[in-house]
Amino acid sequence: MNSTDLAFASALDQARSIRDRVLSPLELTQLYLDRIARLNPQLGSFFHIAAESAIADAKAKTETLATATELPPFFGVPTAIKDLNAVAGMPVSYGVACHKNEIAAYDDGVVARLKQAGFILLGKTATSEVGSLPYSESPGFAPARNPWNPDYTPGGSSGGAAAAVAAGLCAIAQGSDGGGSIRGPACCCGIVGIKPARGRISYAPAGDHQNGIATNGPLARTVADAAALLDVMSGYITGDPYWLPAPETPFLEATRQPPAPLRIAFSTDVPPIGEAVAVTQKFVRQTAHRLQDLGHHLEETCPDFSGLVEPFVKIWQAGVSATGFPPEALSPMNAWIAAQAGTAGDYLRAVGQMQFISRRIVAFFENFDALLLPVYLHPTIRVGEWADLSPQETLEKVIGWVAPCPPFNASGLPAIAFPVGFDDNGLPVGVQLVGKPAAEATIIALAAQFEAAYPWSQHRPPSSDTN
Image (tube, rainbow, N blue to C red; front, side):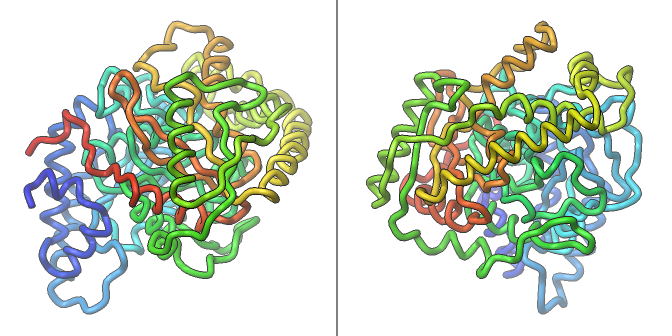
């Protein structure tokens, strides 16, 4: 296997090669650091490259490998952490330029879980400023760019993580999703992203301050890798205000057994925002036909999302305000967002409205096992495409792009995004499957079945496919 093939190997295969002593953690870590050194200047995937600590950890793990009899599931596999999450000893900027040199004193709960699973941390991946926007162009940082065409965004706010996985800078990465911030970058970059059900992954130690709309989750090139990383990330941490019980079997197991015939709704329309553009509609309908060919029952229908935009935007605005950064430290867009947040009463009224509408969305799934939707309503935008718009105009553009995603942050339902084709610009297009409450296993099994029938992971960005 040449170095490029190894870089694009699945994380599960890499972990297996390490356990079999065919590959060492040091060899794999050095391979990725070399690729990062070569490709990151063009892609901006990483805000911080932790080369020194990664090599030290890789050397220690390589020495341990000589005598170890039992190893954690991803022992020696390199990964990356989104720069909205704290890693002890690494910078944590939250995408805010004046915070670049702040060093975290602790690990977020999800980071601790990744370390316990044996991962080696390569660094911190690019995010939008305070994670608020669906493109990763924080002022004071190089913009993150799409490996398939660097004139385009990899999405946001987990844009750096998705670009890193797509470009072969790591096999698997952590992201987070408060309105599509895992699913959107997965769609833009042609990889798999899972937004877990509410309560599946702990927000320890800081906790959740947006009424459960956001969650951490995995980004990977295969459904199996994403499912295995979800297994690692999941679980209660002492003091969590809410949580889900562990699944009956690991999520990775769900990828190994095709599901029984399911009743699946699908739609290219997201009421009341409107229809997806033609190329997006084409791929949703093609995916629906393919799922039908796999034995499932498809029906064209969709929940009613009417009334959700206003309360969701209010909670999103309050989240930016709650970061505590003064307006002068933020971009004009985020300063404007924070200024719209209103009072605590406004926030609580929005929460009540969102919860009321979410009940209607969840009730839709009493008649369906899954819902197939676009991830975004139109293809990937260019880097800086909306830079000259006013904040209000930008907000309208954002809503019109990401509309299929926030309803499932509001309702806490699980969703998985995966690639299904290319648009007219040669950029990936993805779809998402949404599941019943706490039913990640069902949509993971369905996505794995689709992936087996219509494989994708052999596709690589042209600029990243060199030794």
